[in-house]
Image 1: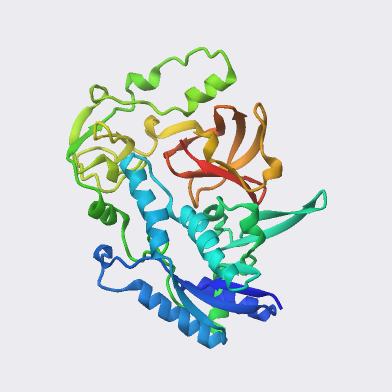
Image 2: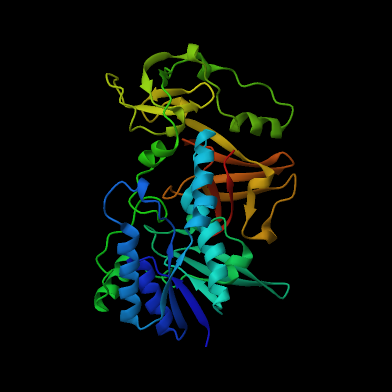
Length: 395
């Protein structure tokens, strides 16, 4: 009998995942990850992880499976939280959820599970795993979840073949309503529970407050750049090569104070991200202001009116060589190669038509249509049909 360790989070998805595995004849063990214990930064007096681990325990009891809690807060702090602050300080916007899967759930947690004699680790992610055979070797595929509204393959875009080999995604074939229905029939305590929001599982921490507790405020100016500024009217240079053109297309405009007018003040450029609209507290403009650029060195924020402002759009992005990741290593591009894909630059974005171009300088993702708010530090992931084959950090 194969043994599976399920990451029980205290939510409905992982509860139903555990039930389905048991039905399929696996020996199932429930493990709750405690990833946070610094109570100075939880905003509310509720203690979400206690509530969650309690719910996870109740589910395990109901399903009749062994249950234990593992404390991963040290690794989580070092690999996720410290990394996040460093990224924000450098003016990048990290994605803690993608990292949490790569570094914690499918690494630290997986090693603990395997040390308990597990053959597999399972989670409540809405995605599916496929297996192909190439030259007699199994190759694992990360496929989109069947529920279009909930597909979470993007969050697993940094997994490796070794990690996928040991992973199971029991609810990938189901929709969210079906999962809730199963939980209701089983009378699980998590059946009606709302989906968790907020940092991976630090719990009810809102990111801006969390950042403010760690990064010192620093007053700076907010500039508005007009959409008919000459910057957007420049002639495109003549390029010696296609690579040069891609570098040009993927490079952000460097704004200077003289390009715009001062419209307000902020408490620190490192709290803000491209495309952000809330939290600027600048009134009196005809359309809402969107952040088109932040400069943590000069502590300036540049904004533009309306979501169609030209400063929000770019047609290409670059991934540095060390940050290119192929789940399907057999599809990896060699220098000079290209590939047509469907890509997204954030979770929940509709897939966009794009072409990958690999050069020694890095991998370029060139979109058929300009994309809004391409953000440094976030992940771009690319698909061939419903298979996510690779990803990288936007540079």
